[in-house]
Image 1 (cartoon, one colour):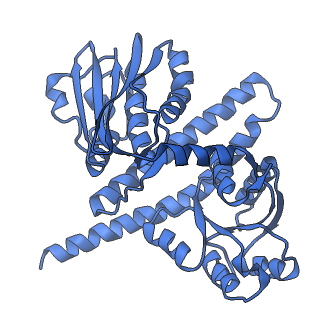
Image 2 (spheres, rainbow, N blue to C red):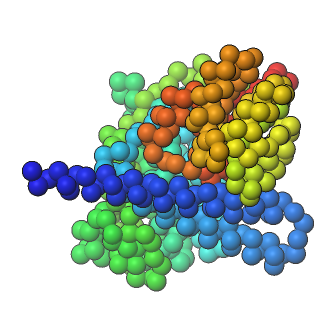
Image 3 (cartoon, one colour):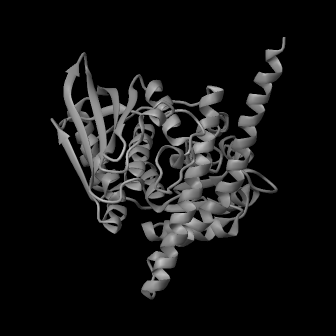
Length: 383
């Protein structure tokens, strides 16, 4: 009988954190979007440096929010694993590229070696795999002042339709003492508690990475010598996907261009401006409205739209009800593709999007690359 209130508190805590995440992600979406647009403009080097610092600081805040929410999801048993097909070599190269500026600034060598690189696609939760690798490389660079960080991927073991991938991140940093190694994957252990060069962390990154590796039927381990450096090894079995069909699908996508006319329903002025700029940069025609009621009125007057980007939480008429009314209208626009714009990370809200008739969703903060990639799936025309 005493356990029920505890369970209730956990659920309430998770929902509260998810709600706070939603409220924080909305302004972050605007800041990151404006920052991205400013970086494309001509400006003095000093101003560009300040813009990059803003972008870096906001991304750090977003990372902190994500860590806290992921921790909450894991503790509540609500962390889903969503496998997709991906090209391992391409993804690893992309990850390394994001860290090159940091390594260059610290004058540290950052190298990638892939042994027996697969010529097939793998099936796994790419976002979570990337999250683990990014965390390990980020830590390695943070605690290495000279020398190098070597990222090795071994793909030699193939068995029963699975490729057993071993990721290794090895650095020449300050290392961790034997005593502190015992608490390496405990929650709330801050980075400066393990290594003493003054750098700090959320205290959740390695714990979350460890839990994610287990959820993917893998394992994460670490070894270190104080003053000599550290090595973290992430092992995970990934299903081998059909090579030919996936490659053919990629080639088809590459031959297509995004075209069309988009109706954007968004109540936040800054997010309106940023998303509209992104859409026009892609090459799309855009009409902007402030709520679901205005979206319905526009569709009734002008039915020549190819897609609707629908914010979920808007005044007067929210995105959920507006979508349901569009689907049940019986009008020619009833079948138009509708993509949700949502700052919520709760699975039940994503399920709700689908239940009211939304075709897909884009999580805030929305980056240009994510928006462009998602629209490629819905707005394509042979070149």
